[in-house]
Length: 103
Image (cartoon, rainbow, N blue to C red; front, side, top):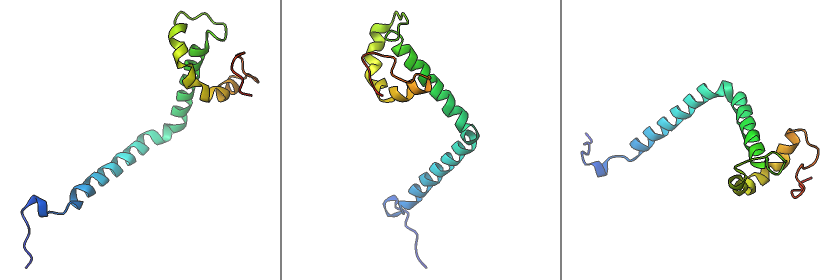
């Protein structure tokens, strides 16, 4: 009859890895159950918030007075990657900014 080892160093390390893998799978499944039906609405809301943020940051360049323009100017390089998609979504055929040409 095989004997069981009582030393922690001789126990199988797969037991804890298997438990963490199961927990991660369970967590992903719960996340899918809760957020799955609302994924499209959540993505649309995030896009709307991103569009509003872009409008606030680019407001001074578009002619809207902005008292915080000095601070939002630092964020413009981060918005440049998505600028083309943003102005197309807003219905502008070309870039509204003179110094940013993307089309």
